Image (spheres, rainbow, N blue to C red):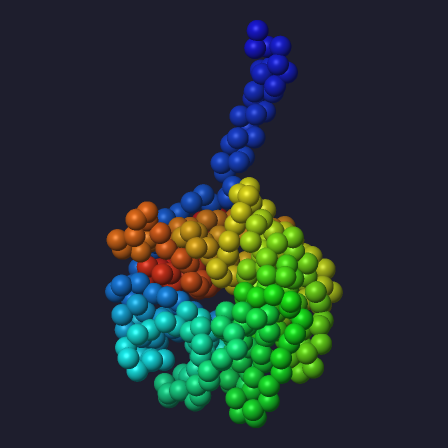
Length: 335
């Protein structure tokens, strides 16, 4: 009697089984949760981390020891920094300039600029009118980008004192990024919009629409692409020259949140991290998922969990990650 349902015919059942297999195998490389190597950078876990563009430096906001700067070639601690004198560390945003000259760090109320050459702060600024949501710094510390909870984005030049406020967003700004030369900013917010704009004039270059809150943006350091992702299921790569969509990331989940995104030097691949331990590698031109890794869970977390803070391409077949577990982990790309 079941044969009366056309979906239960043998041929359709076979097709249905193949379709289920396709759903299960969302990436060519499968899930890999065994790192090639693992080094602890924070004993009790971390609030935030950032890896330099050349993968030589990691800056980690630890639960127990302030902000630590690591030389990844030797795995030696170079500096220890603190925002507060009372020993508490609430720094949740870190960004290293593309040229490794400066680092900017922030908690919800203040941001600081640090020299990586001497390991000393060059300035500390407090924001009173709205909380700091995200932050970025350009080469030589020339410009600092500050996204805020009131929808405003401030571009600030510490050495000249110049300040420009971008007022394009109508609601809370969630994510910001800046080009290495400091001339271009990509920002995304709760108004379902991401903007590429010029920090010299405040003029919008491209507007990118989403169907829900934009939660993550990232710029390709070579100036070719931008990445924007929202709170539901849209994650897209854009051509920055034309403003046209290059690809939309292909995944089955109804919701996917991204915590970090990095383009490869050759522009062929995109790495993303998530708050659910996941790292994924994508084909930029097609949006197809190629590999998936799962970082180690934070010790003692129940259920087992960790947020991927940052990632990077070490070589053609190796990637690197920092997560809230306090671990720097290395992963092999299985083609």
